[in-house]
Length: 261
Image (cartoon, rainbow, N blue to C red; front, top):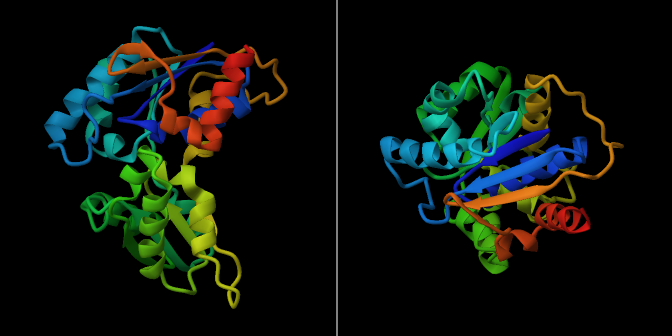
């Protein structure tokens, strides 16, 4: 059994680690695009072209499903990816966890890239899924790039800037970029205010991994034998996890499991 994940860079790691935790026996194919990253500044047509190339490289390894581990690629390229690969390979997109964060109302914030913040796409999610919640959209310039390059100082600066824009009494924060889940602890610490309850962070990795298993009719089994392998594709070339990936818990877990296997 094999599941592929794609992104421009290491934003696919949280979902890959979630799949690994749910099914340690699943082989993973991680397909990224170091030659073409970042995807965010590209036009929708150019981004879709790059995403299709990355997806087809993964599809050549005959996975049972493909996870688009990138919010931006999901917005711009998901219809084209599904048209190219389905029904043979189910394609699962990544949507920010606005709906679960908004349950119960109150104040929430959505941290996202500047291009996504205020976009029709994000405003649509707020309209459709955040009824009853008071939502603050928080742009996070430079955060995804800092995470991608493993620049801890730049991560702290970007997180601090976003935290300063986040109302002190929000009860939940949606991590609207998959890269942000890799630095959830840094974000949680920056948002800690002693006079308020801890802020709950809502990422997408667990839900996306669970949906991928459902689409292929496989139940989660965390106790399965840890026999799953790992294939890394870098703009279509077979390679290894980039050094920056190993700076994060998710990357180290994937790397360690692969070495043991």
